[in-house]
Image (tube, rainbow, N blue to C red; front, top):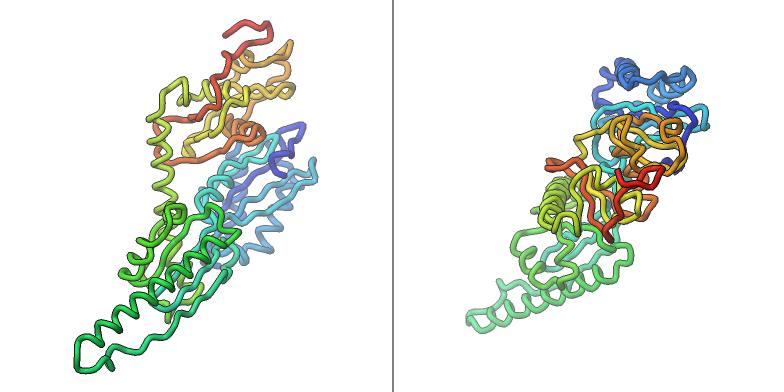
Length: 370
């Protein structure tokens, strides 16, 4: 919905604001918001500023310790507040459309996931999102007589140990069956909780399709577990996993043949996205690139004079407008073309793309290559 909203002028305010936990710091929250908006450069309308001020004043106590994204434009009748999963840096952008890159990065780095907490006799399978924790399934295994009553001879103790192992294996198989049958699991990451020995035994029995989803594990006694405690322990595991996934993505992209399977320069990405040749767009989330966009054909350029190389319009200069971050425009076009878009940290490039096919060179309005 946000990507579809576009104003005639640069009148859409996109504000990303971190809300302190300390209520005493909330008195200066709107002052900080106004400073961010003023630093964005373009003039913000007073009705939009008033709407943002009212929301921050009335609702900041509902956002303690969280980052909120506020999108406002009286011209479009747009006012929306989104509480981000995770955090983003304080920032404001005033443009012709909502600025969505920080929102997409936050969603990517805080995915819904599953947690399986297991011991030798019990299992607890949870689905975790930013908003809620759902119990998907609970499983209580068969009770086994304590080995303290195994008798004098070692044979009975051995039989009891074998019985315990067999019941544990069945218990693990039942839990695996629940994981395989969970329709909403999809490709969500899976975190394992419990004692190290049981986790290792369970992990060894997992089929390959489920093992590939395992993001990591944490130690916890299921008998004392609560949903809040499970999420508290699983969240750092997911954070490490997402960062490792980003690093692996960068490594994979840089290892592929340049110019054939991937392009690792921004100009190549601009051409490839416009040709709908991109299967996956990868952007460095600590960079922004001022640029320009053609309102008529959607061509993008870096700076204010390069859009003509891709623009099909008779007069590119007349239809070109400056944009605060050409990477945000590129993100929207890639999503419209069915591409996957990923944000990565510590990238050796500004933008890279995996290609479906090799795009033709960009041409200007006269049809000549630049």
